[in-house]
Amino acid sequence: TEIRGVKMEVGDIRGMLAIARKARGITQKELAERCGLAEVAIRKYETGRRFPNAETLKRITKELGVKIVVIPEKELGGE
Image (cartoon, rainbow, N blue to C red):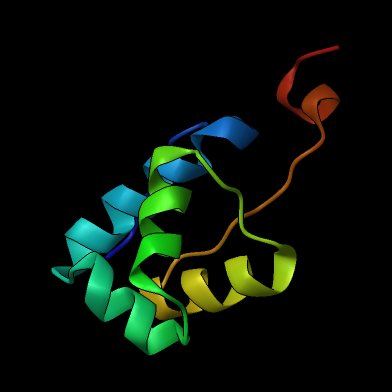
């Protein structure tokens, strides 16, 4: 499953995680188990009540089959 051409801000990572998880057809509990996390942690990441550290985010995105790419705003035509 791919999510392409969608520009997201840092705060939108929560939305991306939920969209990617649902696209893979797995529950928050299944994702948590596969990543070695608590289900409540996944729920908090998806609702924006908590933000995963870099290592945790890497595990989650690997399990979901997505990548997060950081592009400097000036390269996108911003300031």
